[in-house]
Amino acid sequence: MRKIWIRRKENTLDHLPEAVRVAAQVRLSSCFVGRQPLKGIEGEEAKKLMKGLLDVNPDHQDWPHHERRFWTELSIKVPFGGVELEVGLDENEMPLNAEHYLQYRFALKHPKCAGSKNDMLSTHKFYIHDNKSDEMAKAKQVRLRKDADKEYIKASSDPATMDRMLRMMSKAKPETLNIDQKETILYEIKNNEPAKFIRIARDKNLELKAEIEEMVSAGVLRKIGNQVIHIDEVLGETTEDTIVYMKDKKNSGTLTTLRAKLKEVII
Image 1 (cartoon, rainbow, N blue to C red):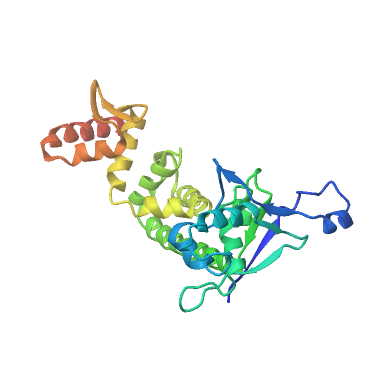
Image 2 (cartoon, helix red, strand yellow; image 1 turned 60 degrees about the vertical axis):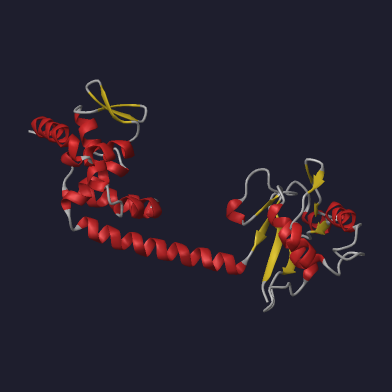
């Protein structure tokens, strides 16, 4: 068994008295995509799951007509507290409640229904509340933050890594900061953007990327748009292209020159 709820957007009828809102007949109804009604499922899946719900079998010549009418006439009443649907599947991957399952799949595609409360936009009038999905999302966030904590501990134990990450994730200039300031800035970034923090920390090209940013900051290289330029030579259309250039052994002389210039500027 698996229960989900389709619920109304909280402020949909806020201008009305509560008694009116409770009694209001609000529905998530059919809509059209081009000339066809929005379908929760299609093709072979529709034939499998809708068999027995329509007046004809999937192999009947009138099946398309009945299928189209089903989706055209579909309308889900959503009361004040929401509507509960059983959307679980059995061991054969068949719905425990076919009607509820089709309504669920319809709602997932509907432009007026968000996949979760957190996904709601101004155009949404309904959202799907799924305890299982919410629990999975929370668990994912916990794992994400734990992984970010691990990367932070590793980075904070290496001053060079801290400097590189600061260059990649902030406008701060590491050379102007003391160790406490660096740790504080990285800690805040880690808490605010854990996924990005992990991605940068685990980037195998972090050292080169940070070095490019440092060269740009020092005026050894220039950036015009995404291009990375040395004097009048475009080293790469993007930072990634520039890394490929720097890793190429035939360009080792240029890299040595760039690093020497950077050292002169820093000194």
